[in-house]
Every structure is written in C-alpha cells, then in structure tokens.
Image (cartoon, rainbow, N blue to C red; front, side, top):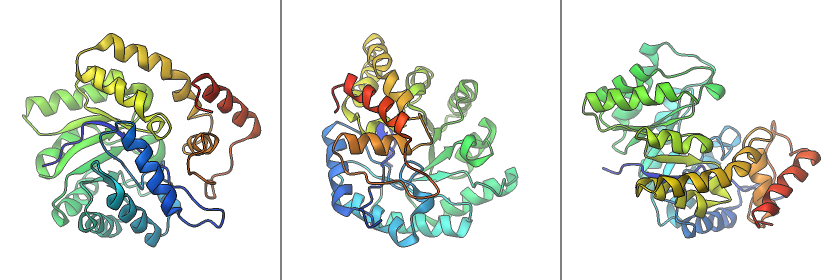
Length: 295
C-alpha cells in the first residue's frame, strides 16, 4: 500500500478572472512542482481553498490533478459532515487518487467517541490510505497522540498524520507509541518550518505550502535528511526561513497565491471571505522573492 514520504505541495487552486477553476493553470502548477522533484501532490486542502470550492469544483480539481500528475495524489476530502467526507473520499478513490487527506471535523468539536467513529466510517467506505490532518488552529480541536495511535490501530487504512499542531512533544509521542505498538503509521510535518525537527524525530516529510513556489529546494532539503546529510538539510532550511515566514504574512493561502502570481505562475485571486494581500505585505513578499531570484 502507498506510503507518504517526502515533499507534497498543498496545492493552491488557481482561479480565472471570471472566478472559475483554472484547469490549464492547475496542469501548469502540477508540472512545475513535479519538475521540482516533489514526491506527490495534495489538491483540495486548506491551501487549495477547499472551503470555498463547490462540490463540483472540488471533484473537478481532483480529476484534473489525477489526470495530469505523474506522482502520487493525496486528495483533500475531509469535512465536518461525515457523510460528505465519505462521499468525497469515495469519489477520490474512484477518480484514481492514491490517498486521502482528512481534516479533523471543524466547528462541531466532536468527542473522542464521535471522532473515532467519523474516521472509521470513512475507512470502512474506501480502500485507499487515509492521512489524518491535525490542525487545531483551524479546527478548534487537537487530536491527541493517544487517539491518533488508537485510530491507526483500529482503522486499517489510516496510515499517516499531517501534524500541524506545532507541538513537538506530541509528535515525538505519536512516533514513539506507533513504534512501540509496531504500527504502520507515520508522521509528516504540516508546517514548513518544523519539517526538520519533525524528521529528526522520525517524521517522513512534509505537506508543504512553500513547495508551491519552491519545490526544488524543499525537495533537496528533505532528501538530504533522508540521506543522513543533516548539515546540508540545515543549511537549506535556514536559507528558506524568510520564505517560510513570508507565506504567513497573512492567512494562508493569501501570501502563497500572491507569490505564485508575482512569479508568473497560475494563481488568480483568493475567494471571499479571504481578502487580497495588503499592499504593505505585497512589498514585503516581493522583497523576499527578489532575494531568492524568484521574481
């Protein structure tokens, strides 16, 4: 069964001026990232503005990326509506996606029993690997290390977690508990700047915002860690820190879509309720990109 490892860009969704999904733009973005050496692509996540994609658009993005990608595709199919998450995940499987990324149900704030039943229901409905997405800053709820490992033990196709809690103690505990129980369950970073710390604990890579615009150095950094060249990985990481910071001048994906636009990549606007990057932050972003020779 497919296992997530390496750099997976959390793909932006480009829009046309008439606010349609830019299909050709999507294809260009996937080509750009694959040429940069990424291990896979993650469409329809937070960075892909999944919250403001219609059901038809969500499916279209999955279809297009699966059709054009030559690397594995992990489709974002999570929801705070269990039946909707099941339907999206089944659709992704039927479309040919290699795995599914499932965000913690947001707003509802389910108890542990409901949380487990939510993911188990999805796992029972499909055969592809499932990656939990733990991002308390967005969902209002943390999935504890114990619950994550219990889910991995109870639901056969839960194979990994995108950890964006920012809690390295929790990350280490997950990895330690999974190892002690001999579980086929891995951790990937959900924050670019924590990629190396998480990999040093045994993590397997990152689902990345920065890889949308800098796929090659991100891939080189992670490859260096896998190859045991920690000094090279650290050197690349520290060099990339200004880019990491710039991607969060405002709410993700506002800065990364503007960065892509400044670089001449397909991007377009962000959809409301997200607003355009402020002029002051556009100038800050431009200066960072100029430092890297990206504009």
